[in-house]
Length: 229
Image (cartoon, rainbow, N blue to C red):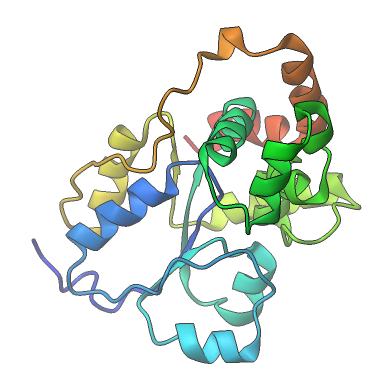
């Protein structure tokens, strides 16, 4: 492996939940041994303290939103992953329901509320309502008050990114990232939810609800198939 071409590269990995980000991080850590990685970042509004803490790392990885990347790490290369929006939401739902961490509000509510009520709670909506557009076009913790504008900004983010992959074809897409970084990245898969039912068995009412709340993510996904991949 040649490290000279990657040793000075500084990256922000915008990890959108349930798009294969944990798997990609594991691949990168195992392959880019000359680079330092931040801890996986949680959803937050980043501060100057965060900037000082994380800017020392070659790869800043986690649930960073585009707004914070532009404010604090504008000169870094961006990599990110997408996933078919309805499948991403279903994966999130079953992942949260598989957890036993009652101290987390989203988990506690997922276990205590009927599904139809839970998916409309603020903590669930952050991860189920056009999350890709909101995170790539603005900040995922903000109220999505102008989704058409965020969609266009998300497209710009993807066009400016060093690399964009897909959860569905990550093992194949990562070959392109290997070529960009001039190193061999060995595919691995982690953090997959066990026992997830097939999509065809999901309640039709829930699928319809997810389609209704993800129209902009679906537009971004379809646009990316034609313009990014």
